[in-house]
Amino acid sequence: MGCHPTRCNEFSPDPEQYYEGLRMKIRENPDKVIAVGECGLDYDRLHFCEKDTQKKYFEKQLSLAAEFRLPLFLHCRSAHADFMEILERNRDKLLECGGGVVHSFDGTLEEAEKIIAYGGLYIGLNGCSLKTSKNLEVVKELPNGCIMLETDCPWCGIRPSHACAKFVKTKFATVKKKDKWTAETLVDGRCEPCQISQVLEVIAGVKESDATKLADIYYDNTLELFFNKCKK
Image (cartoon, rainbow, N blue to C red; front, side):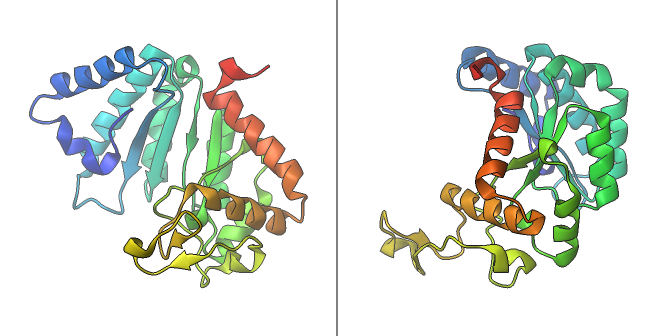
């Protein structure tokens, strides 16, 4: 539950009313809301929302996460320095909420290392994290204890043109038009949750590791952050 950085203009004209609306939805759905987000900064799409507005309401949502002790589902696009600066001055709130995951990560190794060094933050990987050879070099160096898998469906699917495509083993039948969809097919160009297996296969290939063992680690990482109460 939260507001994407490119949609932070929705806080206007009455920021407190909008914020209270988020609080109310969390209070009314304690068994459904497991995180605050997707929130953060996106400087690639400033035509949707300018920087200062994004920063203001990103910080506001950190207070929301701390209040309800919910982890964060974080977004950072071409904004690493400002993103980390905001997290640093709100370290107390991150401790209260239990941390978060920086999803769809496609940054540099240096940026990843700073996120990990902060403490309590995971790196979320999907098809957009695995497009280029440089992306794969970064992923290879990431510690498994800090990785989570995702698809970001219906976006961020793995394409044949991506550098990672050679590692994909699982193939899915597809149809070009959505009106031809069946339970046994995917719509071409649309990413689906089942394709998380392909993300795992790529990471296993890049790291030259056993996919099943990695799946267990990444699953435990997810439980640790989002479902800690469910762990045995």
